[in-house]
Image 1 (cartoon, rainbow, N blue to C red):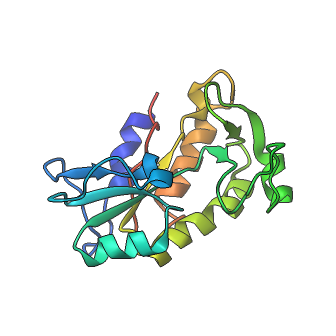
Image 2: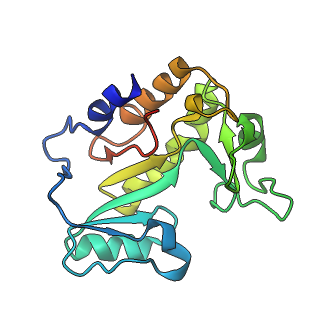
Length: 187
């Protein structure tokens, strides 16, 4: 079912929105943001970066003609993000009253916690600012990750809640010119 939603989430309702096609060359910097990335951007059209890897980096890539996709997890709490800023105990020092009620379980193998996809209003409150930041920074699209909670035993939430959350991300969550390329969205 969720696999059928991928075109919906990625579709460009606004003809001015950038469309990323399979034949474009890519550079992946998203998971190397602390160390400056892993790939070269030379000759690459699309560059995938971490949303919180630096606004100057994002703006510079845009100014150099790259299509910039900004990565973040919208299905799990990543404690290092500035909207949480977890301490050594793993608890958020920022927005704790918003984040803590959303945590439903530890994501196996990662230093992240699954978020309660049945609490759509709570998720909107913490995720909408990330979509807004991406638009403000100049990202052409976002890559929300870990939106497959329903398909993981350590999360245990219904597929219908996942579909509702993913539809929100693909529609109402972002500016009209911000594309969405979901990651880990289909089971």
